[in-house]
Length: 457
Image 1 (cartoon, rainbow, N blue to C red):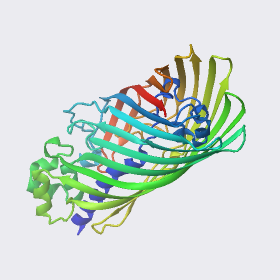
Image 2 (cartoon, rainbow, N blue to C red; image 1 turned 90 degrees about the vertical axis):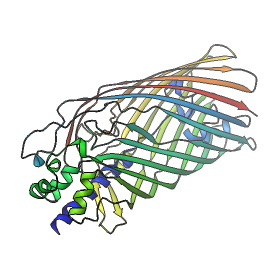
Image 3 (cartoon, rainbow, N blue to C red; image 1 turned 135 degrees about the vertical axis):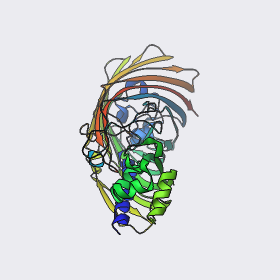
Image 4 (cartoon, rainbow, N blue to C red; image 1 turned 180 degrees about the vertical axis):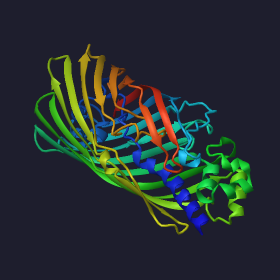
């Protein structure tokens, strides 16, 4: 019975260790390419194309014609881990500091395309409708299966698709209001390696493990690792609203709010067991580490923005905003298993985050518009102990450039570029499954390129 209890505890830790980072997925800002060139400064106040559906639906009534907008952003990510003494849990090595073997590439960055689509319709001078499709949250990291942090993470992929019908009403020359509904689909895939020797040692002890196979005495033995993959998907629902105050032509103050979205995720845990793991489980007649279903609750956070657009001359507009994201919702994650095990509560320690941005638009002539922007985006991760291999993020400084060209009276294109200046984030994280420590730092780089087509109908 003690063996079963030990294996059950390890089984729960592996699943929740893999799945808890669903709650640490980060918000994406890249919902158009026109804003990319100004570091998304003033996004809740600009309202210069149909992408205002996402940033502030009240801006729909500033558009003079029906409009189609297609945009895509290419996010190029580098995140190479530099090992600095990652070790096996000393409780499994008799107190000795044993390094974790590191045989694979430590490059974890995954490039991604972030597309978006918007359609807006002018009903009359006071009323407008629109619908947008965008990707509000997402992450992607992938490592080799024998890298030093394999028990923390191998593959992490979280993707959302948001469908956002919206309506806007212009009360008078100064005040406009907007409201939207968000239908959001979430897909998750998370995987990591299982330390087969640690499973045996923690649940059965060295004597039993040695009698089965001497390889089971070496915790952190990559040659006998097993693997778990967790997948899940679900729909969630929320709302957003916004208000724009325009005291004079071209000068606007905007506020927007996007609600939290809650998910009840149905998922599956699939295990790829090594021969040594299978032999051990058969020897102790364990029912665990077999494919099973699971459920988890996830809440993606509220986002609020206050922004301004100021027309300082005929050719120049300055923009600014502050955006708050309520990541502090991630105090805990509750996971429930379909195999009858009691639910498990995993604590989280993320804090709220703030982004501050400043930018400008300069019109060269009727055909060309230039953009530039800077921003500071504060990470919600409190320290290196809570930074994970799935999301090795830190605070970042943003520099951007962009331009717009009017091709015809009805068609224009936008292009933008962002470079993120990132300090090399340190990580000193203990995995929740076995207590192994991943210690080191990342060399990180991010470049974002965007292109957009806007068509007045």
